[in-house]
Length: 245
Ligand code: NAP
Image (cartoon, rainbow, N blue to C red; front, side):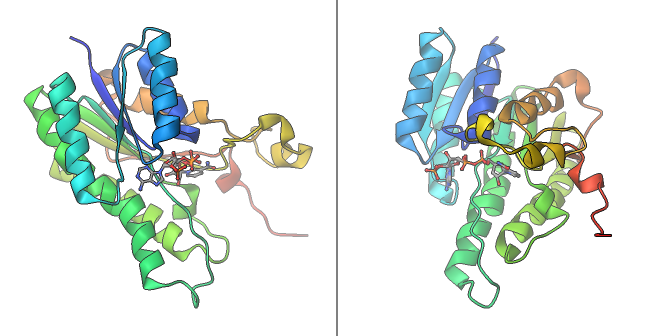
């Protein structure tokens, strides 16, 4: 029986690499994104390689759109085994200028979405004896630059949501983990400067595939002793003292 993985924000960037990896590993891959044009392009390119992919337009900030996504996955594939809550937006503004609408938009897209989609997907996971969820947070859950309040709060909330839901759904053979990426370059890697790469302990900026491989690892059933955890993948940047001398 083929397994099914839902990846949100799959049309671009990190989500696209995650979706491509799951599809290449034989998963029925549900590509959920608000960007129909790139979502459909990815679906076509995966299908051309004889891989299973279904694009579903979904605005994760809209609860009805989330229900539609889960229903479509159920109708099409009958099961959900893996959920990667990756879709996210970052709107930086000085705290004195951040509107309530902007705050709500970031929190509803980055945080509420993961709660609602995880809760809905787990109902189906339970029917097939279990499953795995990965929330994509950020190292900005742990440290900050100026003017990142809404984004940082949404990502910090994801860390807490991860362990609280892992506890609530324990005993159901469900793992819920979190990945906190650092700088993952989703544009032209060749355009990075030497200093961009050399400042990392690993000597390079991250790539979407770095996150994709970790998602796959965390969602493999034999790795189910890792649960409620936050895995930082940032080339060591949050381990580096930055006091200026
Ligand atoms: P990205 O390139 O902007 O891709 C995000 C995808 O999500 C886009 O296709 C975007 O569509 C879609 N999206 C936006 N709002 C949505 C919504 N309401 N419903 C459904 N889909 C929506 O971002 P990324 O850099 O790959 O980041 C992916 C995740 O990793 C995010 O959660 C981000 O916070 C996190 N992250 C990224 C980095 C990094 O350095 N790249 C670092 C730490 C954490 P549109 O393009 O049409 O908006």
